[in-house]
Length: 92
Image (cartoon, rainbow, N blue to C red; front, side):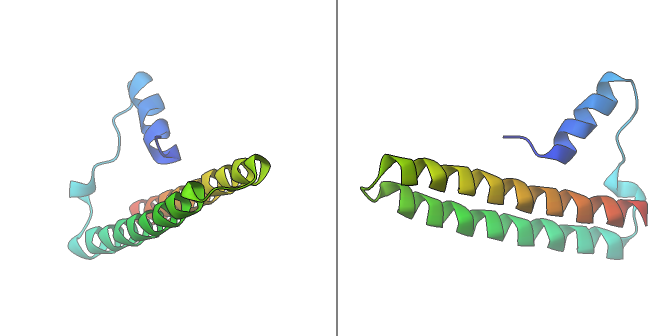
């Protein structure tokens, strides 16, 4: 699944607009961006592990469907927060 940021970059590319490059940023900003990415990756990994554990347990199909929905919403929330923080750092 692609993040909102990746989808936005694809749209810009289709319009002929060059995507922002991280090389143009100073070292401190790149480090802060890397930290944001690491934090989001860790949160997503933790969420994935919890989701896998819950989905393997036998139970009510309706509860399983709700758990899947909750997982997708939480994943999207983490990705969107990461993308917002990265965009904020890119724009200064």
